Image (cartoon, rainbow, N blue to C red; front, side, top):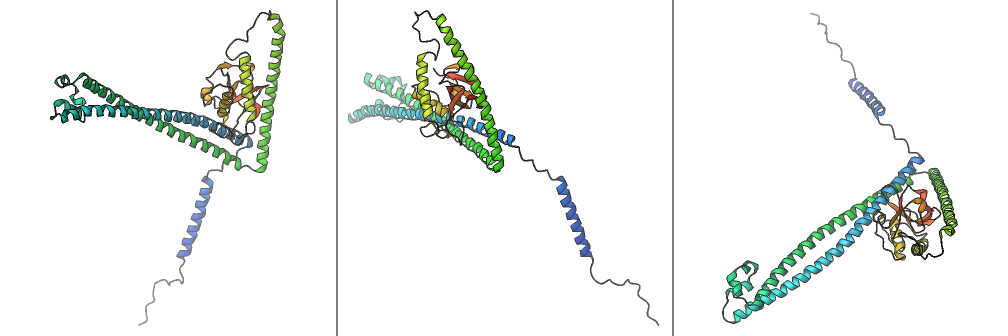
Length: 381
């Protein structure tokens, strides 16, 4: 009987499935990469030099504001530290007086003990809390007037000592808060300055040159405005001098009127400017008050101190001292403040120019008051 033919399909040699799988994976990878490329956010365009200039100026200004916050916190911390030290010393003195009174009360008790008995009065003297016995009328009746005075003194001193301890504790808490604010402000200054330096370090040599050119144009425009102010002030002085003979009768002996006017102010202003000129070339360092470096308000404070006038530490407080004057009526020695947040200050020297400590990386120098937006001016009294 012939063998039946097999209906099974012959097996093909080799395995093709992996090849198909690899092709599928490859196609999926290409598709995924294409999709990612299509959906990826486009790279941000590099900022223009003008944008870099504005950003750097803003960072330096923010650092200046943080510097004033640091100065304020530092002054508050120093003041609070002095207050705490005084309170702790006062509390110690109260404690000494309290102990003296306690010893005096103890001597009364010891005398009764040596007499052979411990009377209720002695029990009062030896108690940890004599106050708990104080209101017992029958006990007070057995005391001499001297003993009663000692008890009254003890009671008063106890209250005073407790009050001083509480005040010192509260003052220490305030000091801790001031020190925390000091650390925060310091970190803010350092952060802003680091951002500015990083931004500048990323510029090419060509970009740095273009940035320097923008700065020169800004300075030239500020100087042009200063020259215009100088001409206006000179014309005003000439007109005043021409008018003086008409109004002067020869009998007056006055030296001027109004706060900050007359030869007295001019004499002080000369000392202020002499000091400020001597600091030209010294570096700006935030938080510094001299003598080797300054921040803006540290320089103005030191300059006016040389003239015998004490100014507060920050621009925010200095702007409140003296008489407000317009830009047109500025006189040498006046303080000119800048920006809406009053974060910078310079000393007017005349002719539309000032002496100031500009910013980190710069030295004390003369510059047009129009280099920055003016907030207002003050003539210290």
